[in-house]
Length: 98
Image 1 (tube, rainbow, N blue to C red):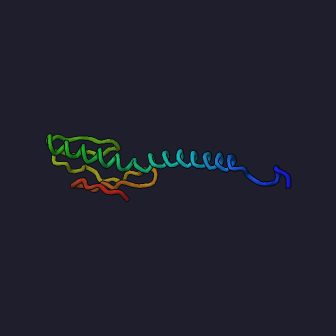
Image 2: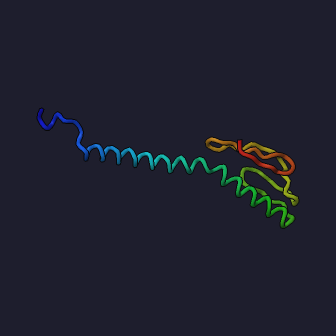
Image 3: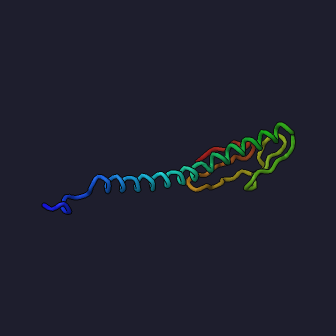
């Protein structure tokens, strides 16, 4: 057998594994950002609702969610994100991820 028929060298194997690992890391970083959008929304939602109750003032949050001075929601809705939905109940403003 000549040296060209022996298959892949160790360097070629390591280089291909490095490329695959790099592509996976880049893909996981972007997937991680998209999955957390609904959690960021919920944490800001809770903050705005708490501020409305604390200051006894009506507040408006993004996507048309409005709170009165007691922290209650004027209109229930379902807000869609990339993979999940946040459901906001009319009344007490309880929100959960679906």
